[in-house]
Length: 299
Image (cartoon, one colour):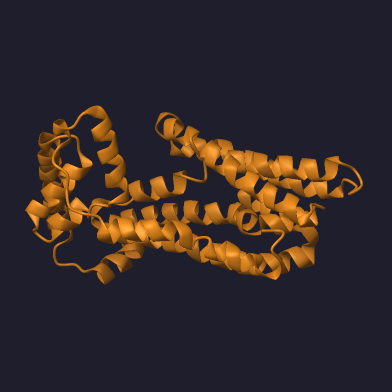
């Protein structure tokens, strides 16, 4: 991208079109259901599962909401290993929806939205979800994700080095998200946040202070990149996955749908606020001040 000139940003944005094409084809044009997996050998079964990931099945829960039980069963056959498991989950989803309908009867979506703030038990859940989603943005992760190339250029990197460092930042995020699969249930959501937040604060502050290292020193860029990568490594197993898991669990069944919607809207709203305001913060405070401004918000 650093060698194509002024159209680089157009190519970067347009590159998202490439995976979107097979995804669109997979959603809308893939053929119908497969029989249960017990009729397949292991290689055939693995192929079937991979195809099913691409050829997305409709949500069985949505089918059951519309009283389309046969379609829900066919969809579950594509997602489960046998007809028995599909039948079990069909009944489980049906029973869950019956309970949910009994709880929310007589109310509509707008009414349940206002109840997020009027019912004490739901209000506490709303505050908790709002807090973790706000913290996810205020920790500065998306600032670095959106403007990582700019930050590394400010640190003295060339355009090519900045792009490689940005790729490294994304790679660190990907790799260190894997431990959360094993720790989020063993250590707990709260413990992960309490451990990772202080680490994110000091690594971000250290990255800012590293801008004081003379640019003539090789350590200048290397130390900034090191602490930015460490910041990402602490973010990925903690504040990365926990807010979404926590927000999905904290609401009662009657308000889970609208509550989760409010939580995600909170996250994306503050992401947009920070992405719009950060260039001005960077220009006014310099990189040291910008990192120093964000790091207390983490802690």
